[in-house]
Length: 107
Image (tube, rainbow, N blue to C red; front, side, top):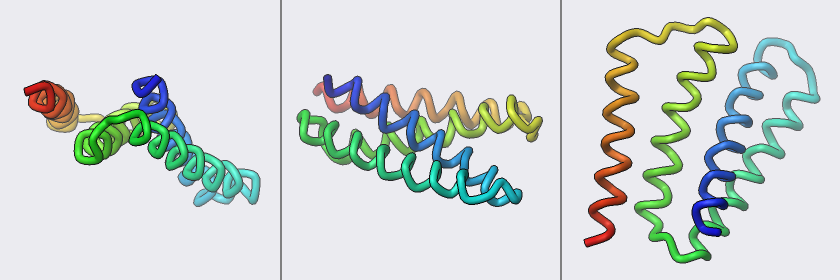
């Protein structure tokens, strides 16, 4: 269940961040509600992840790094924001970093 909660934390944080973009572009109060609910859900899922036994440093690192990478890809798909080769390299390095954190925690 820990990884289920981690996935929920990541996805709800990304949804909240994307909703923040909509709210900032005059989307109205419904998007602000989505931002609030999304971030509250993300922190609730992150709390459940920590309660499930995942160490704080690992959980936060995975959550933050995955959120950055997914938000960059989603904003490219949804709003045609730039996603350059250098940005792609950065996302690849994030993935490698998250894997290193997870593998390092196993030792």
